[in-house]
Image (cartoon, rainbow, N blue to C red; front, top):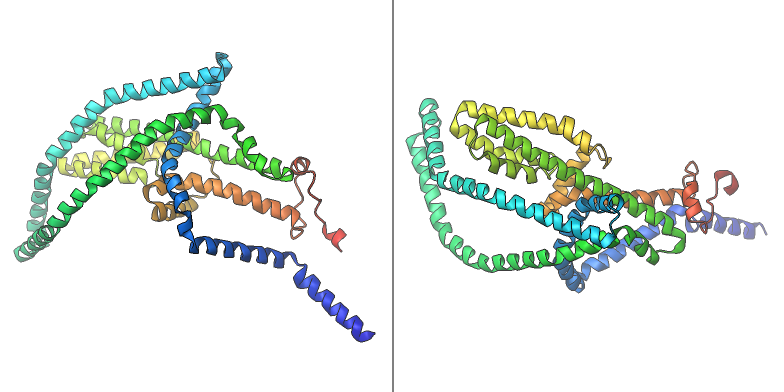
Length: 404
């Protein structure tokens, strides 16, 4: 009897510690998930049609999504103030947007074209000025001898002579890529307005439509998670676009005041680049510094002063006032997200990496909070009463006293 009792107690101990253990079950689920991911990666070729479809549909969806967050407040304003029907309000908002874009481009494109042509025409003079300044500095400080300069010239000439044929063949082969890119943009311009219309029409009902595929017990928490994602993305996109417009105006005005050439072109470059957090304004500063350095030392100093003024206004006034801390992300986290997203997805990753990470953060936080409540591994974390009211079918987690 004693041996039987010992064997049963040993089996019970093994069952409680390993087989019926929450951590063991969690690790097993993680292991199964990794197995599924590995199988998907090994058979990635089966998903090629899916990726091709995403590649075709993604640009139109992204463009329509950005415009949705811009126009959605205007549509609601027209519905509330003017008591317009939903479809009519959407049509008015879209027509106003197209009219504004057309007016801006008709008035802005000629100036940008003129300044761009001026930059291209001035490139030989710019290069000569740079060479003269470098030669003058070399004569004063003797950094390079004449033999070193001749060797550098010879290597540069050899490099470009070898690369000439490759450049020609690459240019000819890139014609097909240009045609493909133009056709993709045409498809996007045709499809995006249709997608935008239905986003504005059914966007508020989308979470409830999507929640129908989720088990009833989890629908309330799922809809709450989608609402949180929507708030994060909308505040980020609207805030970034507003800050970028303000940066465009600040740089254009500042460069015009100090008399820098091509002020409007440099400002238009700086505005969209500001959509890249932390690095955008610094990248936009490079061409302005080059033009300022070639013009005169005082102009270079003026460019630096304009940048410092813009940096103070953006970081201390515009960003805190317009965006606040809506993403609730540490600056170091944003920097690493930009580096990783840029490495994996290029320029698109740099622009969309931060809001994408914010969405992923909401999803992971929601899953982890649910796991804390119902795993019984965190007895100090009690279920949220509102969440329990929305999901009444879930059992109440055991407390530490009841488990004992």
